[in-house]
Each structure stands twice: as structure tokens, then as C-alpha cells.
Length: 55
Image (tube, rainbow, N blue to C red; front, top):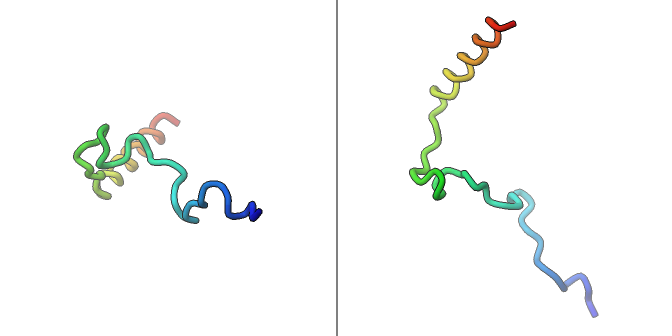
């Protein structure tokens, strides 16, 4: 018997093992839009400034 051919097939090399529960476009985030890069950079800069002030 060829034991290498039994069992479940291997997944893709670059595929995640599972789907995220809060991925854009799912029921928890139904509109599926990711925040734009400018908004993200503004949040990161604000967080860095707040960290500077606290330190």
C-alpha cells in the first residue's frame, strides 16, 4: 500500500492555515474595506508622539 497517497492533501505553500475571524468582508466586518494608508500613518504618528510625551 502506498501510504504517501493516503490522508488529506497538503495545502498550498503560502496559504494560511485558517481564515481570520475578523477579516475584511466577513460577517464581523461586513463592508470589507480596509483602512487607507494615510489613516494608518496618522494613527502611528499620533501613537509615537504620545509615547514620546509619556517617556
